[in-house]
Image 1 (tube, helix red, strand yellow):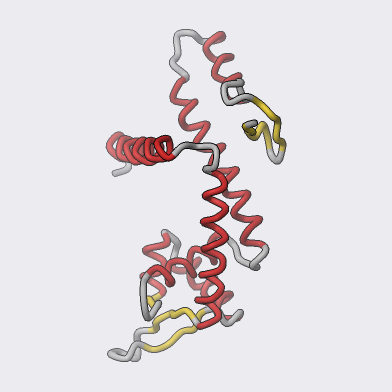
Image 2 (tube, helix red, strand yellow):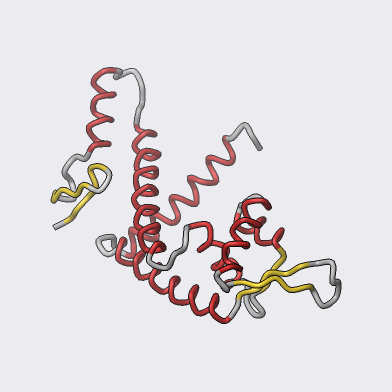
Length: 184
C-alpha cells in the first residue's frame, strides 16, 4: 500500500491515485477561478512538499551524527573533492552556495569537533586550506552511506524509468526557470 504525507508528520494510507491536499487545492481553484490555469501550482507545490519532507528526514538522520545539513554539506564537499580532501574556505563557500561568513562559522564548529583542520598551503603560507581529518573522513563516509540508503528508500515505490523521467523533467524545469528569469 502506498503512503503520502498529508501534513507535517501525518501519514494516511491511500491508493496511488487518491487525491491529496494539493489535488484538493487545485480543484478548489478550478472551481472558483476556472479562467485561471492553476496547474503550475501542482508542479511547484509538489516540489515544495517533497523538498520539505526530504529535508525533515535528512535533518533527523543528521541529528544522529550531531550534524546539520550545512555541516554535512561542508564535509561532503571536502570528501567528494578527492585526495587530499582540502580546499580554501572560499572554494568551499563557492561550491556549497554558502556565504564566506556562514562557511567560517561551520568550519569553526567542525574544527572544534576534530572533523576538519586548517593548514597553511605549502606554496603560499598566507593561504589557509581546510582539510578533512581522519575522523572527519570516517564520519562523512558513514553518514553518506546512511544518507544514500535513506534516499534510495524514499524512491522504493518509484520505478527506475520514473526516476529517470523525474531527473530529466526537473533538469528541464530548472533550465526553463533560468531562461524565464528576470534576475539573470
